[in-house]
Image 1 (cartoon, rainbow, N blue to C red):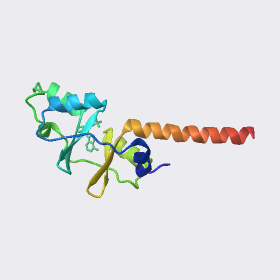
Image 2 (cartoon, helix red, strand yellow):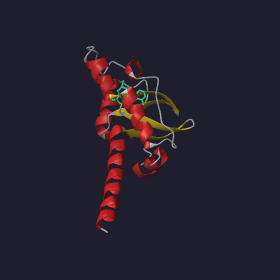
Image 3 (cartoon, rainbow, N blue to C red):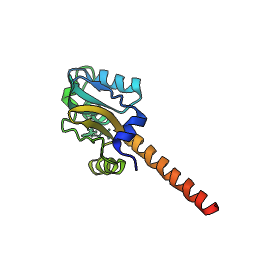
Image 4 (tube, rainbow, N blue to C red):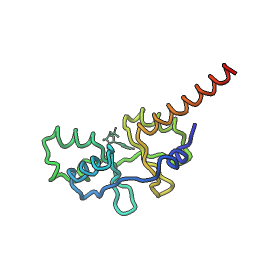
Length: 142
Ligand code: AMP
């Protein structure tokens, strides 16, 4: 199974982020623009939180707050779990399952080098299983 570093190399290292002082409205706009479900919250080069659509649903809509008057910093999750390039895809999936979130930034030391979603990981697992099936089929029919 691929490492996180190999997966980031094939998927791309682009990470979308937002500042803690931006409004939640601007964050949701950015997620919609890029077709993604979470943003890293960065102060310069430093990761200080993560914000997902789930934070918006639960901490803004359900609590009757205004998305234009609520700052990202007010609803972000500050204790960010991350993966490292030498971690395996399986390790990431079990962390996401255990902690019940669907996004995992990839950090190489202090540097953000990518972002994985549960969709990226599921896609990778399916593709590896497909290769195994094709190899076994060739073996059986040979
Ligand atoms: P998600 O399933 O990714 O939409 O996120 C569900 C909740 O977990 C939200 O409150 C997110 O802010 C939080 N969250 C998402 N990813 C992470 C992560 N890597 N580390 C810590 N919290 C996270």
